[in-house]
Image (tube, rainbow, N blue to C red; front, side, top):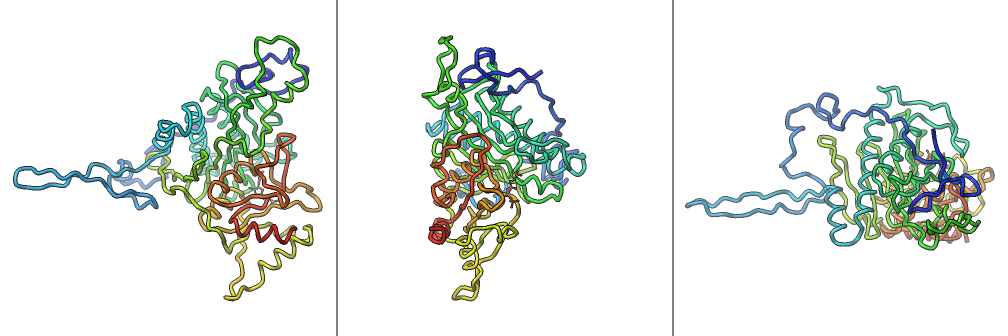
Length: 423
Ligand SMILES: O=P(O)(O)OC[C@H]1O[C@](O)(COP(=O)(O)O)[C@@H](O)[C@@H]1O
């Protein structure tokens, strides 16, 4: 039985005292059987005995600080004893930033619970054709989209992990009609917005998908005094649903890429860091430190099937990209139908992604709150830019949870070039 409660972000007010139902609550929902990650009898990792031992050989990762060694004289012999290879994991990285005061303990727990949800989703995606988890769920979300089975299950996993973190007050999800309040027992301060499976059309063909998340603090001026038993007025109610904050308020954001590797990428406001899942022991290992998106990039990512529906200025821009440059090489088009995959490639190689408005979708296809804002936050943290064609994405305050927006995002100089065409 789902009880409806209004949440203040610091506690809950029974719906009876609010003029209308504002949220659904995360009650005891079904849990889905998951095999523990890297379970030797089921893991897809190589079965050689070595693969189940914690590796002590240097990892050929992008980021490995030279091994520390300690030279000790043993009798007449000198021996160099390797102390350890400081491979950093998401867990230790979060604790390090908590100790240095960059994030508080509560946000550390929320991020850790999100990474747990992502590991479980990665495991389900890998085996979806085996466990009959491909295909439609048979329901439609508030956006009128057919939900895939894994859209629904991944949403439940995110909700369950955030609820048990005990640090989340309200969530907004692509797969939830309205913002959802965590019941008081488990309620915390943070507001978490997410798309549990981005690019879900790719699931059944085993192509790239991802999860996207953003974390806001409580909107201070909106916290309602629980001792105040006066009826909630309209302004306060509006405040309570303050999940609709501009991306510039984000405290942290990131995505998990489910592709040939599972890569958890995030920013807590001090650069962008990526952690690759090592399936042999189920931990995210730091592989990309302080990612800086190249200022330019010769890859553009637009669904050109909509070309005839676009504004003339945008068409001129696309025509320009296809002209062979002085070296004869024009831009390369890449479109994988998954925002997370496009952004991950761009963070590492540069380029531009666009999902513009068109004759039939006045505001484009992507949602501002839990897709465009978190991705724009990340790309700006990496030195890139993100606009709706007229203004910075992070400056837009959503007027409702599932509001859509056009988006052009990527290398700073590529976005600036586009803005000149659209001016
Ligand atoms: O089908 P279009 O209009 O090209 O839009 C593709 C975009 O929509 C998305 O698939 C979002 O879809 P979801 O609803 O699965 O999150 C993005 O991942 C992708 O970039």
